[in-house]
Length: 95
Image (cartoon, rainbow, N blue to C red; front, side, top):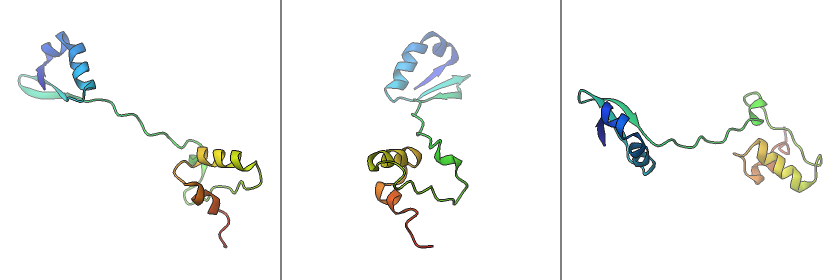
């Protein structure tokens, strides 16, 4: 949907509702597109604790440090991109 700046100011609530439904709104000045309004996408969760590792550094082996269920939960918090199987094999590989 393409609207003028005046229409956008007058009908902002309706335009926001349209964007929430998935429509794209373009605001134009003198029939030239100036701004595109699209629905905000939720940000991907950040791996805050895992970012403390240097590139290429393996995560620490927590095996035996906590009880097994807690260990898996902690590992998943630090490295959500790793499956439990991948986590459980890190640090057990021969050098």
